[in-house]
Image (cartoon, rainbow, N blue to C red):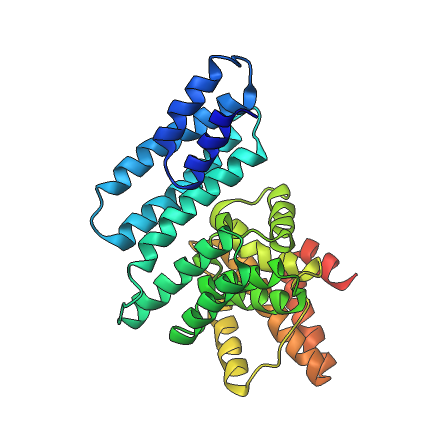
Length: 305
């Protein structure tokens, strides 16, 4: 690989796609058919506009959000590319999340608890994308201390545990996050194979968008990914039963969103059934199985086999 290309990659990693593109164009003159150079130029073209636009954003948090949000657009852009190169993608990811991290680090003194928790979450996400999993986990643990029971924070924590090969912790936390609020979890930022494999399997069943997020914990249970449970407190059991009652009432309304309510209710049933089994109350667990059968026979067959 020529010195020009190596320098270009260094510039991409440091968040300078415009300068990198100039070097890549120079290298392309001597290697017109080099697909990696052409791909790297395409990537630079995508990020040059983003970086320039971000420079015009005064608020550091919004500037960081610009980079993170455009990363999702970049993932869609990659799907249209005929061929991608890991070395290029690593350089781009390093550059983008280093720029985003610098923005969030400017806000380390934030006092408002909700905003502080979000800044810590995004800081942890950036460190995770940069491969610093332990540092990421520490940031996310701090975020969870500031704002407990937040699905997005717990999902990122779970992802870090999975990336650190601590699968049991990861399974507990993923299950918790998707129980709290699946709609607050963004799968585009989850990296571990543990959760990505599950997501792909659910997508292969035809689910996407909001429905995908609701079905992930259902198939997570059925496929043995969400199979590590914690003991529920009495107050949590009461709240779980209340939520089940509310969803059972809601689902009777012909105007309800059944595509979201059905998987949500099934997941709640799974949690209650697990509690009854743990208590040795098999008759109550069987009664929950019957409710699942009424709701979705295919899920029931997978559940009881």
